[in-house]
Length: 139
Figure: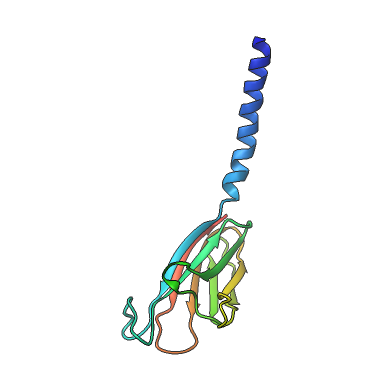
C-alpha cells in the first residue's frame, strides 16, 4: 500500500510540473496604455476629444500581440490608425493598422512581433493628438 501511495504522489508531482508551465504560458496578459488628445495633450481630453484607451494583449499565442480597445470607460483604440512596433530584443520592426467600424466592432490588429521586449506606438492620422506608447514583454 505504501508503494502505491508513493507512486501516486510521484505521478502527481510530475503531472503538475508538466502542466503548470503550459497553463502559465497560455495566460493572456493585458497591458493598458492611453493616447492623449488635444488640447495640449490633456490626459482627460475635452468635450470634442475624449481620451483614447488601448490595450496590448500578450500571451494568447507565442510571438504575437493584439492591440485593441480597453473595455473600461467605454473608449477604445481609434479606427484605421497606424500601429508601429519595434522588438527591442531582436531589432525587428513592422507596422499594422487598427481595423474595425463605427457600428460597434472595436479597432484591433494582431502583430507578429516575435518573442522579446516590444515597443508599440499608435499614430492617429487626424487632429492634434499625442501618440500612444507602450512597452511590454511578448512571450
